[in-house]
Image 1 (cartoon, rainbow, N blue to C red):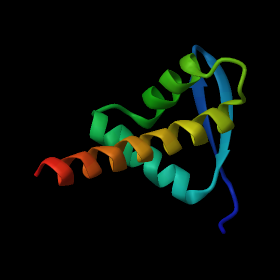
Image 2 (image 1 turned 180 degrees about the horizontal axis):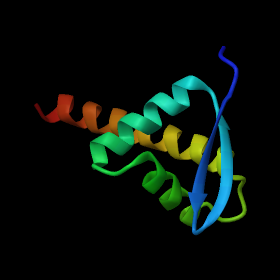
Image 3 (image 1 turned 60 degrees about the vertical axis):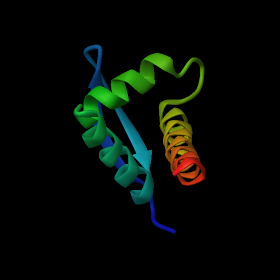
Image 4 (image 1 turned 90 degrees about the horizontal axis):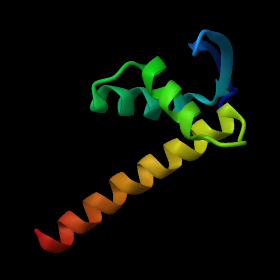
Length: 81
């Protein structure tokens, strides 16, 4: 297990930081690249959708759902392909 890595972002003019383990950062960066947006833009979008959850927790849940959705797509493709 890796120690969390802290990164800072500006969201709506407010500086904030997120602490995530390297695997979460890696998936988040890959997702941003796949969607053609910056990491900051993706984090801003997650922030807007997070409700009352802490930002780091919201990002982890977003990454989990992203990976699950990708796996579901692969599984569906295998069934129909």
